[in-house]
Amino acid sequence: MKNVLCVLLIGSSVTAVAADYRCTVERKVAFEQEVTTADLKKFKFSNLVEETEEGTFVSRCSFAPSEGRVTCDRYKVDRVEIDPNVKIKKLYLFRSQFNLQLFPNLNFIEDNGRGSISFGQCQITAP
Image (cartoon, rainbow, N blue to C red; front, side):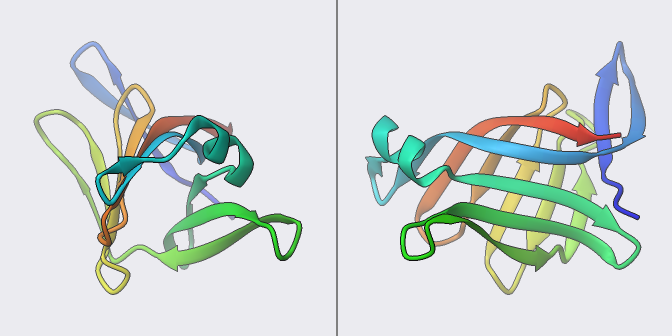
């Protein structure tokens, strides 16, 4: 059964709701240059976040021209933290050297640890 912890601010309280997230990259900066809007549309960069009985996972997805479709690499999250002050959920993948941060308003930042940072909006895709 797939579940993801959704952190939502309601006033000053935090409510946990089971959900899957699809996070679409709307801006990507790589090696001091920004990826063009055309390339963002062409390569369809996104992240999927899921929590299962086996652990929390992040999938990094993009269009693979050689396969003619979107493909994803799935990684098990090493550590999940929720910042007690601003309620940002932080997912750390140590071996892959990247992290993904989910904000209460469902914005996200992905730092791939190799010089690019992606920004965008997540949507809850399953309760």
